[in-house]
Image 1: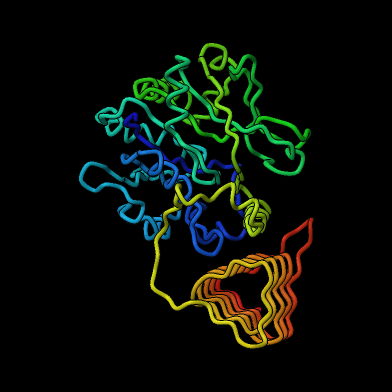
Image 2 (image 1 turned 90 degrees about the vertical axis):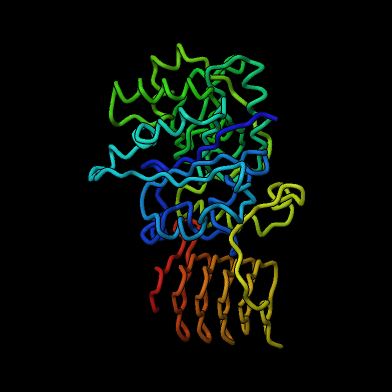
Length: 372
């Protein structure tokens, strides 16, 4: 088993989750009522035998830092391993210059001094279950400069909009471009890259020299670079979702209420680690109706819920109906209220006889702490 340095990358400007990202960073967002989005990439790294991990933070770090702490609940060995949160110590007023390259440049000494020979760089907002050791083994076997992970999908006309997609010839990546949903079948990038530590350091130096606005992905995708950098593809076969918009956040949560889809992501031998707390089990009254839902601890359900996700300590009052919705923690759905195809942010209150209904074109959304 190879000793690998893991770097959790932050999102670029294409990743925008309207509403939810106004109050917290995307990696810190609640997911499936129990987890945070960042839990999946961190669990993949830990389950792959990686215990030297650095998390890049772009903005709104408070909730993310509170959640991941020193990494102890991810089963990282505190004696032999290391876990660091890296954020900029410079006053960057223009987001154009807040890139992964510039942040890694500030901390390049950490990478240079690490004992790990290979580096895995993976984003927080891709939801999947992948063993990075397998990717590194293929990387070494092929002698590639960079190994880039991708998945061939057949729903690219409606999902993964705004993600990178690859064109490959004999498994070599020859084109990286942004997916606009023009075709169904395409190779969607997981924006996960494996490279030698020294190659990464050289890449950071060269990208910085050429432009202050380069990201790792943009540098690799450059027409001149992609001709000369040997980028080999690693085909991933498992479950994949990219949480890069409010719609994708909603549909990914709702999709995983489906047991068959959830089986492809969750495995008893591949645990998803997260921060836990002590709270009472959910309570259902005699008149409660519950069908095909994920309900977190501390909830009280008096009304009807169907095909929905409830975060911790949600209260569904009598006569209320919640259908096809994602309800974050500490929300109160009042008597007679109707919620359908919506995301209700934490701490919001929906009062008596109010209706919040979205549709396929626009998901309903209520802001954190709002009273409706």
